[in-house]
Image 1 (tube, rainbow, N blue to C red):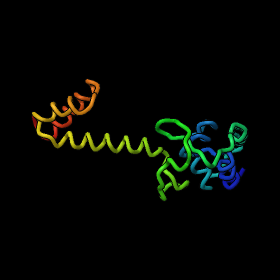
Image 2 (cartoon, one colour):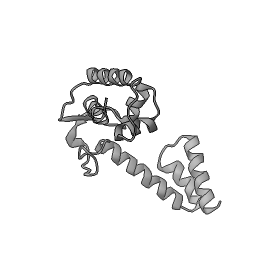
Image 3 (cartoon, rainbow, N blue to C red):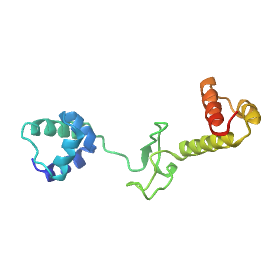
Image 4 (cartoon, helix red, strand yellow):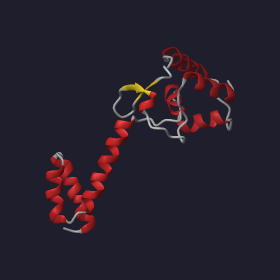
Length: 149
């Protein structure tokens, strides 16, 4: 097996390098060396690699191009529900618009919370949104470390 055949098998199976390395029982570092052609693939690993590629190809379900699964909520949604992102290979983000919006709102609330004065901070946390006591303690502790009590 050559490096080109290994790369082609990865693409056909839809696996990442670390997944196939784990399936073959080798370190990711060695596997990367095989894929890039820096080192030859030892013949003792070829059967395990071929078996893992074949199993992944058999288990692979053809994807419907009009839908995707959100990595945050796990729901299957139309592709139009995922924000565009030209940095991604598919041209869309991995999280749906609703999950991205919730994350941004949470980050903004937490950053606004840190900038409040300490006396107002505790009052604002309790009134503005329900938080678990552990999360409340963590936020107050982080804010007190930055700005003092």
